[in-house]
Image (cartoon, rainbow, N blue to C red; front, side, top):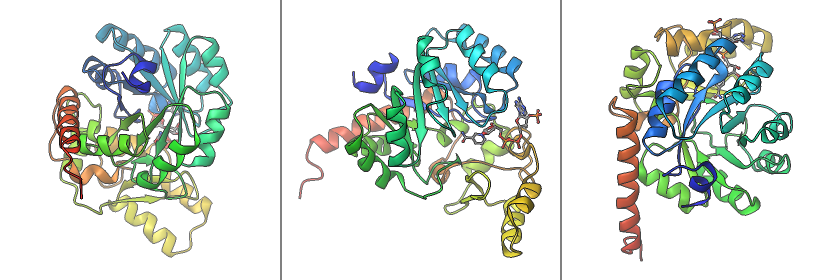
Length: 316
Ligand code: NDP
């Protein structure tokens, strides 16, 4: 058992990222039942929906699972009370100050992990008393840091400076990438994009099919003036690009983005006008399979790569 599997009481230090419109109870329960840690992404759920999702997850698995709580969420107090009511054992907080909720959640027996994109925020999270941090590199899909620091640069830097367990995220979708992240100093990995293209993900079929056919270079980190987000360069993004060329200000961008674009793209399957949040690693995803197969493939490849490493394949 390593620090992450011990902290969460799971078999593999492999965590499925909480993703709006993609990670409901079906995906979270399937990942937890496969030996990883499944996460319900609560950012796109009205309070009564989260309540229902947690209940279903509790029925579908007796293994630990978590809820991701983006702090930008408007009804966060209600989500927190629902999480406490159902005794969810672990919460991953993101996009906000880790001081706000950590102690309150921990006082209710909940382990708290905070998502960061830089050393500065990792130290802040450690100081706030979180149980672990997720460090997410520039490659990752969805909301992301402004600094464009890649996972390869981020993980060794943070691993040296913090004492609490570290989870690497961004650009990881295979066992070899998982081993690389652990070699860089992480204790576990968080994987998002690979799990979007699974049977259990609640993403629309159009979005899943878009991911498996996505060529290299087809995602971009944009809209830094609002909340930086990595998405597919579709027709909606072309409008964003045109707006930048026309010197759009923050207000213009806000107006162009409007409301509910992520739902339109990822949940309703509008590949033209929707916001399609996915990581760079999408170009490595070739098929839609079950979450259990994803976990197994990654773990099998991890052990194969580790065997090669131990057999001095890299000696020179
Ligand atoms: P928008 O403001 O564009 O739209 C809000 C969406 O959230 C709507 O589709 C709405 O559904 C749904 N929603 C669920 N609960 C509520 C609520 N209590 N009040 C208002 N709307 C609600 O936001 P986004 O879709 O871009 O993001 C939604 C949330 O997800 C935010 O909290 C954001 O911080 C988070 N997020 C996190 C990401 C990450 O990487 N961690 C990535 C992107 C977003 P409906 O249309 O049915 O009304």
